Length: 314
Image (cartoon, rainbow, N blue to C red; front, side):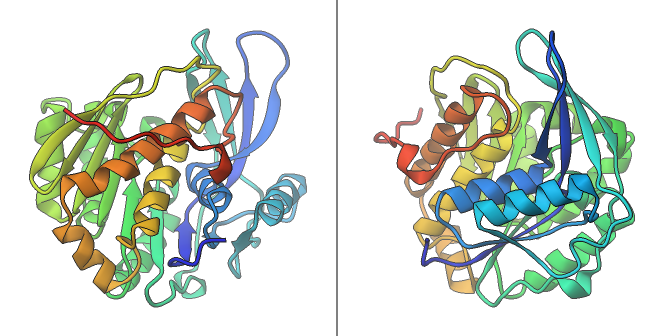
């Protein structure tokens, strides 16, 4: 178990009902924040998840998995009337399209990020009312003593039009130290801007590190005012479910190991770090994502599965 700063993850846990191109559907525990929590726990970090599930059959499946993975559910996480679900329809390339049945709320009084602990949030839980406003209150309260990471993980069918979603997403970005998004997120949120323009816009709001994944293409990293491209790893793709969440877990994990996330001292170290300092974090993130896409479902690696090469960038 990591001796570094504990991590609090806030957001949705749900049941993914995965429909392959052929054959019967299968059910798996999912939800972007829940996936990140499991990914971090498998990498050896102490993790708590603040979420909103029921004590129904689906909720019991989530509770059992979190216990097995060593993720602690915070008080009040099992008070929902029903456990949310997401139907994931996979195409021939293994790419998922989602349909959601959600029940999301949160009592911010039940979520206490410890002094010097890191906070991660994002996805549906940070934007969908009424819980999104509660997540905002948690982030705002934690910002004064803890670092924050954020992944918008945009879901257009739930978030309305980009013009409505942008202010809600950008207020989280402004309080974050690390932001990760996909190229699909960027294209939907800012259809008239390039990816590099969007990265610059986000960095201007406050984060020290901004990262954009682009499927199999290079990852874009903006840190210290400089833009770098980092090559992805060749792999055979089974499906892409949970790949972005695995990338996020690897990114946070490496920065925690480098003592660049945690409390206010770590925030200052992150601000002053060079882009070379960020490279190991991107490499761990890529390693985690490559392993995840090579096997079915959101199944992130454990630390002993990782082989992390000398980082390169261009």
